[in-house]
Image 1 (cartoon, helix red, strand yellow):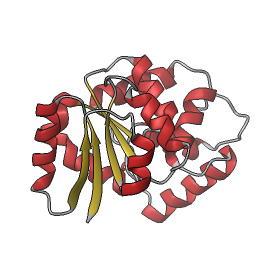
Image 2 (spheres, helix red, strand yellow; image 1 turned 90 degrees about the horizontal axis):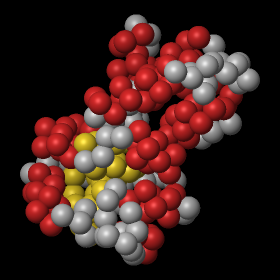
Image 3 (cartoon, one colour; image 1 turned 135 degrees about the horizontal axis):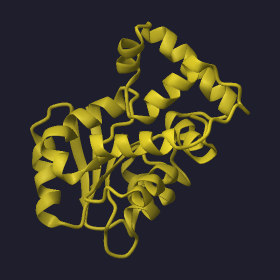
Image 4 (cartoon, helix red, strand yellow; image 1 turned 30 degrees about the vertical axis):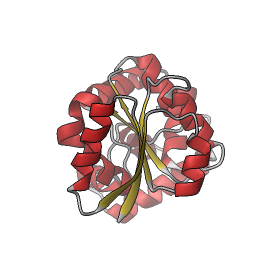
Amino acid sequence: MHTILIYEDNQNLRESVCSLLYFAAEYEVIGAFADCSAVESQVAALNPDVILMDIDMPGMNGIEGVKKIRAFNSRVLIIMLTVFDDSEHVFQAIYSGANGYLLKKHISDKLKDSIKEMLDGGAPMSPVIARMVISSMHLQKPNDAYKLTLREKDILLSLSQGNSFKMIAAALDISLDTVRTHTKHIYDKLHVNSQIEAVSKALNEKLV
């Protein structure tokens, strides 16, 4: 069973998400908070597998909360839950260390699948968010400083779309082990250790 922390200032939505996950046997909500003012001590004490983080909260916002978490915990998986679909909030969240980005209007039908996808190695995003990321990357000029192959660039772009390794393998008609091998080469060439670091670097340095 995977443990989950929730940060959401809207009480009705917070309780709704808790109820939604309560009936999923594979997940256990171990904490639900209205703000992230004590996020460091809470995450350190409860050590969750997954965090669902709202962006717009009183006091410290969710993006700052993610930065606080990433300062001492690079393992926990974080999905931003938000009404915002503008590029500034999206990229701030990605750069701060979020693993996924889900619009609140998609919570009821997408949340459980998004958590599973993230646990399987993906980076879930609502369709409009994925399109925004892709559009931004298409507008950028290629950078060959890291000497990524065309296949590696394809996989890096697909990772940036939030696709899991299984989805990439199916889309490119290659094996799962081949995707993992290419991804390891991407990490080595970019000098990163995780998918979110690779995607952030790709966006920051216009690699795709």
